[in-house]
Image (cartoon, rainbow, N blue to C red; front, side, top):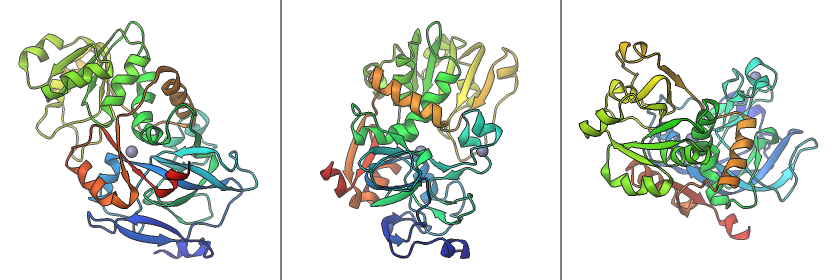
Length: 362
Ligand SMILES: [Zn+2]
Ligand SMILES: [Zn+2]
């Protein structure tokens, strides 16, 4: 542990979590949180979703742990049990935190609603706080967490806390770019990958009232489920006839997953002239594409990373109004390791949410 961490511990309090120390197996880990700041909110965690990013971090697919033992989890829902003198939540509120817990609040990105792109942003785990008070960030596979209340969002009363959890990362990751790029009436939208992200992408495109919503998958077994999620069409990437018929027809394609044996060129060829190919999947290998694939028809290849605070509020409003919900399986927090293994094997349909004992007291 760094000296930085030691300077900022509240040694009167201990939080217990499940941490990775560089192996794929999580073990119990106790830490002292930072001393309470004026905007801080302490949450008794009831639910935390397991995100693909947690797996990449645990298995070090994106690089080594840089800040000591890592408590993963950035789809955190819980009840407020203590607040700082200037916090925007009150005791008893049900709130959620996504993949970021702090930003400078005063740069170009912060001032335009892209706090997630701020150079001073702190990720929810495997990071340090950059606000001058020191300390490592720890995630939601735990009993409690202390977070700046500016980065906590009230959960609408019609969304169950377990279903709210995946919306905080998978939900915002798919909602924000579709909304920003105008998925809506008059547009044909494709969603590549029907999994943890994609099953929400299909629902958002439907909620935003796109003319057509085409689910794009490598597996015919997802055809029926795609329809239930609101897809009006289906393309199997491994079916050359279906790929040829769909080529150049989609105004917006959201790429939520990419298999090692796939071709970027083939997927991008589905986009209509002047359309957008939006990448939210984060494969561990670099992207390889023949430039003519997008130059020839003026296609924009763009990326999107979670979403800012305003987008998060808007996302919850849409989820409420249009009944967008993740499909989830819950299991006890004490089975975090089993849950992680299940996700690594690609078995959930479509998100796993860990539930603490505090959930029984809601
Ligand atoms: Zn995530
Ligand atoms: Zn900033």
